[in-house]
Image (cartoon, rainbow, N blue to C red; front, side, top):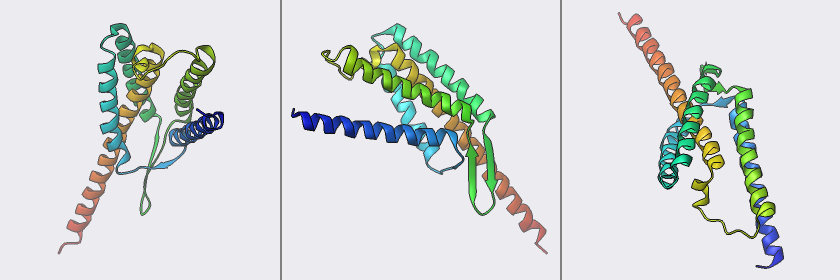
Length: 184
């Protein structure tokens, strides 16, 4: 490969990773409008990814155990995060939530640290090694980081959908009650 093409590929990849880290950080820290679709998409994609990663890890039972433990910790962090999330139903504007900033920063740092370590490993520690997609399932550190984030996202998405459902049911009940009060 031409050195200029290689450099352009690395710069492009770096820009993509930086953009994703920035967007992930903003999503985990600031006030957000609750999307109708994002939590549902999360509940489809992440369990599928968890199942695929678990399937790939079956050959390494100890790694699978690390993955399961991290997934459980992620679920617990998701419940903790939901308990410390500020929810707002703003009439005429929509539903909003503000995740716990400390937890969001900590999880973002786990994500960034794992990416940084992997880049250091690939480019400086063992640049001559051949890496494949199965390397993902062989690394307990990667499995733990992914399990922590996946468990968090899954349980947080469930909590967001449950809150949205409660708010919508309460609004329907209020509207039904107002309709009965206006009836002759």
